[in-house]
Image 1 (cartoon, rainbow, N blue to C red):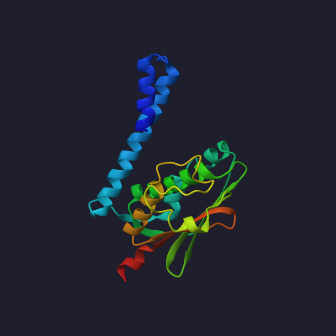
Image 2: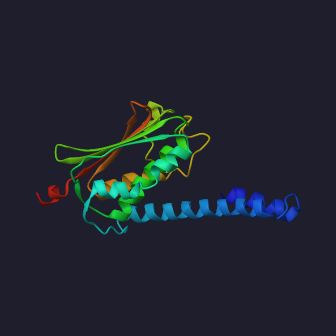
Image 3: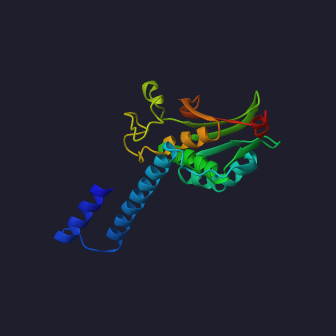
Length: 212
């Protein structure tokens, strides 16, 4: 973003570009991207030293996921994607920070929207297995090379696959997601999705597991 901002400002200063609504919007977009990058880096640096605040409370992950994904179907449709949401009828109790978990879900959604080809599918499946709450987040093509899967959660990693070349963000979103999962005594892993794209698998302990 800094390089783009510098180039845009130099073009305005040299008279190559005129200061109009389009140039202002372009500058604002780069400022917004830079602001998010700085905020993400700050959050990860706090997590590194254990200074990131989590306000955990009893909550139902089914209800929280529904709230976090309000409007997701419309956003998927705008990107030419179909959202398939599979939620259980019973509550899924966890001890968690609702704001941080919403952030995690939001990052996963942005990842799918950014990379999944139009005409594809985003499937979200929530269930319980062996006392743990399991969220499977899968999307369709393009996929991620096997050699890149283990590095997806590294900061600034940008693989050479079609999911990373043209539309990549800062490379921090999934790192933040894993940090949030680990802060909840959970895990977040990546595998090839049976739909042809990327599968992200979140595992969290039930709330009553903390008392055992």
